[in-house]
Image (cartoon, rainbow, N blue to C red):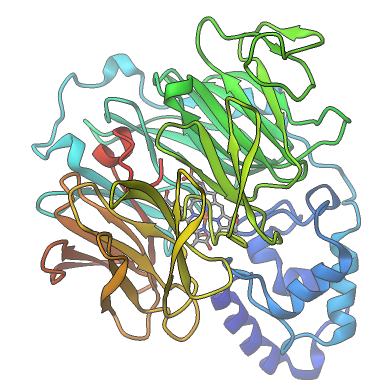
Length: 517
Ligand code: DHE
């Protein structure tokens, strides 16, 4: 249920007046289906099925329908629906559907299509732009992607994507191929030398994101529905295996997200409904892991039956959930927080346990923060879920060294090694059109920029040299605005249809500290 939808619905309600259907299924269809899917399997919004609502008590569901959910596109319906209608909708989404949705390996295989054999692709780029300084810009407004030259800021290719892409574009280690994932489960592979689509496959019904292994051989998809991780061959996206996500006590879970941890040769998956982090080793000689126990890599600490692979799953059991998180640059630590938590936690992946609590009552989004060097200390900085604050935390002591006040809760903070500045959006509230520029040397805001007053400004990404910062003006008649990262002056504005994220090839494949990976 997005805000625009809310506005459309509000208008249609006024028009329909007293004729508003009180039947719950039609209420659902009218207000919820566009984002959550006609059959509640999810779309822009998550699936609304009992299997997916395990962590949400009915009381909280009522509150979310009434007032919306922070840091998401879910708006409140208190002014549109009465108390009985809200209660009926809450009851409705906890009812099992007539048929339990499934998406088996057979379904995945049947959806697989090779559109351009690798042997038909050229050896060299067919364009003259720097292939490592390209950007993919996701335009959510009309479900398109623009490939942009990162030096001249000229669009090179614009193509229709699958519906509702979400999550960053992922690249092969040499930057030649791009992989995109859509909320409804499609994984697509593109060739950035010839601007062709190479292959596609539907890995799930409601997918969170995808990750490409550090060696470029595999793609892993994380699903909310079904509760699976799906491993694909990166070359043609053919499926290798599905992994059912079930705890040692037999409870199944949605996957919050999957990331690749190149120094560890593994994929790391955080789970939504069970407080566990999973590590899946993709190397040819994986370390065997004990099945179903909390364990570290320390020899002798493991127990029970062993899984020798391939792709053994190591389960790190935690006390608290991790909804939003990111990694330190070494991929030794996962730093994150539960959305309803009072504090965050730092998990040491080698030790297989939490090593510190941090003063962070929720992050606004996965990978919202960055790491950088401050006076000789590695620090992490992230906006907060519920307040206008950026926290800066020392990564040795895990203590907060500064809380920078901002004009409202931001979604993303981004920087680059070659710039002294970090940029953070405000994203919600009356100042959603603002972005703050923070000096990484003083931790002070040095400038507040409003690319288009009155319209949400979001998600910054730098070119490969850190010379320019690109920002989205988040509107159907929006724009991608390019700023000189030194003078902080606008240098170019390209009209775009609700641009959301933008992903620079070089920064992604080199795991630049100022961006997400
Ligand atoms: Fe995102 C990435 C989850 C809402 C824009 N977001 C991701 C990823 C996940 C995720 C799992 C994947 C990381 C990756 O691989 O790159 N997002 C969630 C949520 O749980 C949340 C809060 C609720 C939901 O709708 O599922 C959420 N996200 C949003 C939005 O409302 C945003 C602003 C608009 C939209 O398109 O839905 C949004 N998400 C983004 C963007 C990225 C993203 C731009 C990539 C960021 C990056 O720089 O890597």
